[in-house]
Image (cartoon, rainbow over the protein chains, first blue to last red):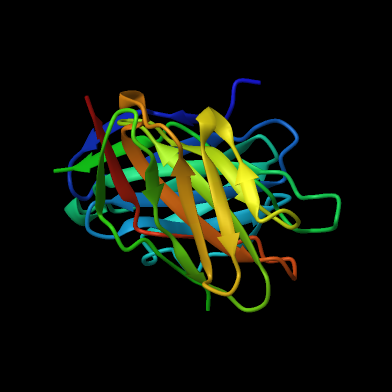
Length: 118
Length: 115
């Protein structure tokens, strides 16, 4: 398997512009997670989906952030409008629910998108 | 609420020496515990996990971790460090009940192995 795929790997944009980050989870995985990593705040969970449905978006910083998962093989994280403080590395991860019922196991991370907002 | 503490920002060890990266946790009920490693400009990679059973868990690249319920710890260990082990290590926890799948990560410990 190719693993979790994220695009773009690097994004440089100007303040106020819309940014869209993309993720393709591992085939067959039914959980998808979006994380943000910064030096100041470490690794933060933004939102996660189960079977394409958002389960917990309590980590989304504000209304400028939105995430969608239109199908099992694709998710987007959008920032509109972007601000310099959004500069970070954004990771997508996926996992498979265990046979025990509804509980996820190991999360597999993508390589990340490094976002710089000028 | 669940939480993870990694008390050391950085651990320095000479190649060939044993290494320990510390992790303590707080969670309601029994935990699922994980260690991940992050190399520069890469995503996190799974190393090992404790779900149930034997308190000593063996993982990738010769790493192991010991679950200690009374001390609520899950320290990562390796008998003989390699320079290539130098990376950022994250401990993570979630409760083993319910359907919530939210992992809580520690702040990370940078391991530096020198010749």
